[in-house]
Image 1 (cartoon, rainbow, N blue to C red):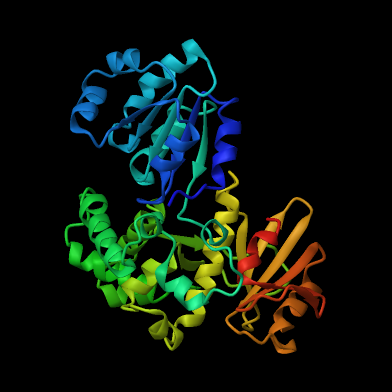
Image 2: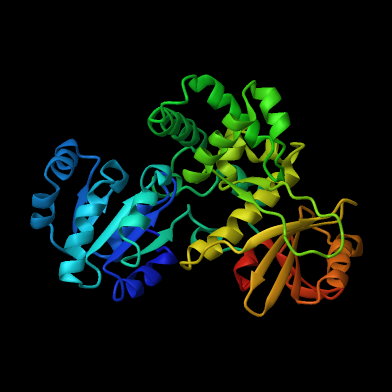
Length: 385
């Protein structure tokens, strides 16, 4: 099953203005497939191939002579030093759409790409499928959606999602994390990731994590950076505007795929998720990932934050846009009552640049209620972020 990605048109349009496009994202998010489908006439090389990788590393000038333009270089993080040689070649030729670079390990190569190819490359982030890329019907069981997750291979090859996530996590630990020398005990790191899964959708508490894992605050921060750089989690900052109130500064931790969260928590099917104590946080994680995808898959960076004051008043997501801010509340409830809109009303009284308020819930109705827009989770793309 070949599913067209929303990012494809943006990539093709951008290739007419930049000599290099860089596509990054988690493993198995579909970067290679997207690059090949978007640019079918390009030569395809992958640095997973040891012979090609050795050639690129040991004789970069000849590698570039043999591949001077219209080339996809997959798994580029395996030879990041190639960027310095590409820079000179690109400046000499100066043609649009010369190379498409893809890579999954942001911590290994994205810094070198942005430094060496500054002004020459447009960077895109591809996450797993979003809801509308996969599902067309409005009333799909949200618990089945969340426990299955959105990684393309599950859908392309009709895989058992539990087996997929087991293999995915083992591969991530063995291939990506093992390459970082300061992580010596992979079992401790594995336990750390599972503890993070139990905190998705919640305020980050470094002291609590440090105590439970048995490592220092600095190590916790380093390991969180690894998870962020490999697109396993994201840290959502607090909204910074001063309302003359005490605002909590700690970020919130979110995983970027609910299927992986469920696997790490031992949730194997929709029925288990339906009664799980973290089902609300996992639903909020699902909405967060959809909002992030709506930005990334349009070639944009995240513009999201959250609001919480010392009295516990909270808005799940704040989107800062050019014409004002948008406040988004999330409720895992199929019957939206007036009480669910209270925090939106509270925030509306504080923020004089509030453009619009939304309540996203477990339903399909799209209407206006209590000065806010009520949206089912399947209609998130209607929010202009």
